[in-house]
Structures are given as structure tokens and as C-alpha cells.
Image (cartoon, rainbow, N blue to C red):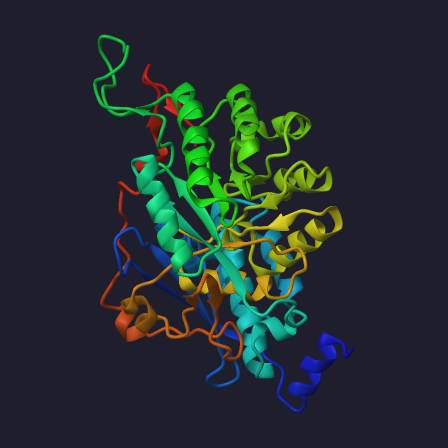
Length: 421
């Protein structure tokens, strides 16, 4: 097999050496809950640039400023072909490593450099990453409902659309475990809003999934996201109760601070575990993978440092029988989705990817945005990441921080205390 580097060198033979000549920050809020920050890395070759996602909707302004004032100027004059070297240089540039802001900035640069390399070679990025090992990328849908029957009907509708993997929540994250405002045994003064009760949750959710299996049979792969709401003891109980349902996976059953409990869960039950949506540091995922304590790694490509880091994680997973399930839903953007897509096409350790649908306005703003057909994600097949950005359209939707965008993370218990995440 021809070496990938040799293929790239042949395709760029006779071209002048490249330099990064500028870094443009493009920040936009085209729809509610979207606070997107992109980078456009300009090169010394006229018309050649790369795009990357620095998406952190909770700290978007800090990310934008850090690129403009610190890391963007550091990259100017560097060789964009030296992706690994520039990744490592950026990693230590701020001295303290693996921060939530620096990681997404590294990811944006990494994606942009791979985009440039693919465009210069006139190949879709997956070709430079080793070529396809699958024809398309299967994704899972998000079903929701306030009752067992509503959940069943929602899952059924996705099956009719061609999906074979469906994540099911009962009224959103923590749903099935909420006590309505003002109800329950509360302190006389204090918090009176909706509260989470983990005992109720552990009773309600397994019962809902038993209903799904009874109604739908084994033809659907079922997933569920606990979103770290449980204490370790009840996480063990929940995992055991979900075992007869034969889940595809249960996600984030513990907060990152309690990952040592996965050893106890593995010893107790065969329920497949997915973990990592909040991970930013190798120390968080390395031992879980190498000790085979989880079945799926759930990091977001932009949160961990980009394509370069994702390929390394996927290789580690391959050695230990763990699969990937990149976290690409919610407020995420099309550039990050495509970065995950190109990695997914090339890795043997792939498991599933989270789905994310974008409006036609977003497809117009970011031409080449991937589309989902019959439960599979498809990129554009154009060189590089295969996506572009309409900067004139972006200007109509300037970055606007939604200061309520983290309210959903501050769930409280009946005594008024905070429930993680």
C-alpha cells in the first residue's frame, strides 16, 4: 500500500512551500443556543485556506479573544504542513495544558490544517487519514416523550426513517426523576422549583425501557443518557436494572470525578457503558480504555484537541476493544461534525456517532454541511473537510451570548443542593 505521506507529496509536487499568513476568527449566532466560533487559517498560496471549529458555547467570547490576542498571532508564519508539530507547540504555548478554552482552540487549528492539506492534495480528508473502512457513518437519533407510550411512538417514527440506533429520554435529561415545583417534602424556606430525585429516576427509567422492549422487540438498538445525575451507589443499582433490557449503551452514568466506580460497575453487570462527554484530558480516558472499564468513549472532537487527538484515542480504543461514539449533538456545529465524520470513516474502532440536524439556513451559511439519510451521515466528498463558509451571510448573525444557556446544568435536589453535572 502506498504511504499516505508519499501520496500527499506526489499530489503537491512542484508547489511552493506554505506559510500561515493570517488567522481570521468568525463568530456567529445564527439560531438560538448557537454561539459558534470558527477559525479561517489563511496561507501563502492564493485562495487556499482551512476552516476549523472552536465551539464552546458557554465560553464563546473567551475563546474568540484568546485566538485573536494570543494563539492566532503565534501561528502566523508557521508551516501548516507540520500538523503534529504545530499541535504540540500550541499545546504547550499556554503552559497549562488541556483547558476547556485551549483545547477547542487547538481543535480549530488542527481541523483547519487538515482541511488545508486535503484541499492541497485535492482529496477528501478521509483519504489522507487512511481511506474508508466503512461506506457511510451510522448515527443515532434522539427520541423523547413525557410518557412511556410517547417514547415508544417517537422511537417508532425514527425506525420508519431508517434509524437503527435511538437514544431515548423521558422528558429530557433527568426526566423520569423530576418532582414538580412545590411538591415533595422540602425545607420550609428555600428552593421551590422542579427538583431531581434519583430514587424515583432509578425506578422510572428501567420500567420505561422494559415497555419499549415489549412494544418494539430487539430490532432497535436502544441508548440512554443519565447525564451524570446519579450518585455512585445508585449508579450501580441503575446499571444492574438496565441489564435485562440489552442496551446498546448507557451514557455518562457517573460524573468525571467518580470514574473509579466504573471498575465496580464492570464487575457487577454487562450493561454497556459509554463515558466521556465532559472529558478534556487523557488522564480521564486513558485508564478507562486501557483497563476495559467502558465500552464506548464519548468525547467531543473539539473538546479534546481535534482530529489529531481523536485518531490517537481511536487507535488506543482499537487495542483494548473499546469503540468510539463521539459527542456531536446539541449546540454543536457542522464543521466539528464533519471532523468527526472523516475520522469515523477511517477507524476500525468506530461504534456510532451522535446525530445532529441543521436547518436549511445553516446549510446555506456553511455549504457542504453533512446530511443524514436513512440513519447514515454523508459528507460532500469535496477536498479537505468538504465545507465552506459564507462570510457575508454570517455577518447577519453576530455572536450573541445567551446567559441562560447553562441553566439546564444547574439541576437541584429537593433540599436545594446542586445535582451534577
